[in-house]
Length: 166
View 1 (cartoon, one colour):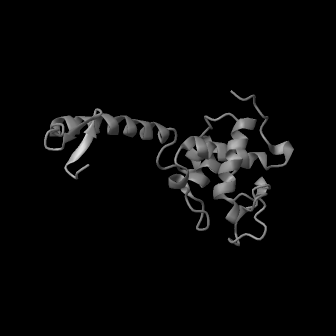
View 2 (cartoon, rainbow, N blue to C red):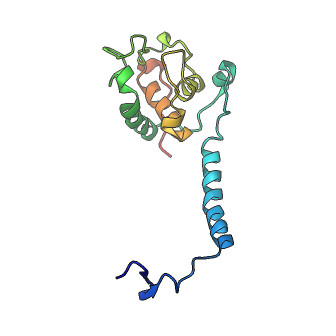
View 3 (tube, rainbow, N blue to C red):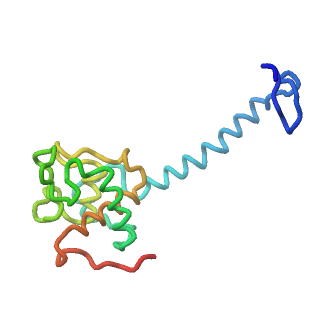
């Protein structure tokens, strides 16, 4: 096969014989791919406002049910993203960050314990030690699953009731 030829529809044709689609068609094709992708990304990040005040965060409610499935998903996210500071058990023992929060004791939380406040701390960061994870986690559902896992670390009397998986 020479450099000028290619296989097209199981026939050997030279590139000179096969014209590329017109620019207008290529542009519409790119738009057809990019617009749905943009709409998808917009819907992923549409659940919570871009900037949350602490009052707004307190009122924010999770669209993800506190269920075994969500907690399990959150555990996987936690193991990938949070153990270097909070440890595998969430107690922040031997942490690289001296001031990391012990996630098993909600009374120690400096930025609040409502599901919205925890979401806000993860997504946007908290104080000068906790970085924002918005870009690392992507979908807000992943952040809500992480919130549910963190709440599963609390003493049983302080955990929300576990719901059935949907």
